Image (cartoon, rainbow, N blue to C red; front, side, top):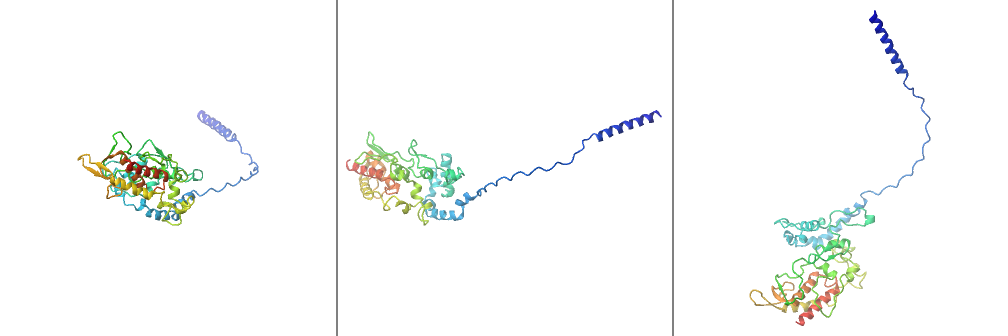
Length: 358
């Protein structure tokens, strides 16, 4: 009995707790009235298609004429790419060597590193855009080397043609092959190669008006970077102008006549007196007498009598070596003096006078 009463009492207490717990929960009230809708915002301006600026240059319609022009150029159709397998030539004569030289500052000298040499292609000169804000920064054309260049033959001299034209300086400068001859106490200079001279591409230094062998003479040498083609134009303006045919301008790099006559009354074929001065200087250089350093035998012609550009090895006067350097600079520039007429004329005429007075 006592147990049953105790059990009943516990049940009554438990029920009381449950009743209290259930009836103490808060009861939700009716939903409130909806507030007034806010004013609609102003629609934003539609953005520009993210690929629109890319398509303007990378479309087939834009690129096909570039491919056609490039195929006609010396860069696209040149026959010198085999030299790109050599570490000495790879920086300009092959695509991979050029890319290593620009991006790393050196080429790979390991035997066979660039064999077979890869020809120049779009990827040789173009890589990645440095900025995609073309509206404010202008197009950078993804050029690998738009910065000023320290010259290989004179590392203390930096040349800056500005923007896209700077890419040209990388290769279009004298190679570090031979010391530029100058007047010296013993009055001699030894030529040790049949290729003596500023190699094949002194265009940038001739345009800048530097690195010639400046023999004193009747004509003064103009100040550096004072040529009109240097101050008022650029490599890109003259050689890559807009044209109506793929044979000129653009990636053919053939100067556009329409661009020339914006400044000239007629398209100049050469600097004044260029052909005559070159012929006179060549004849003198082919008659210069030197000495074979091993046998002591005479060597006739610092420029070989049977050639217009190959040199004889031997010891010659410093004046003859300077004159030969100037002749080769004008010849290898390939502009017939047009890049820098006054500088070219001074180099040639002063060289002629010096040889005639020896």
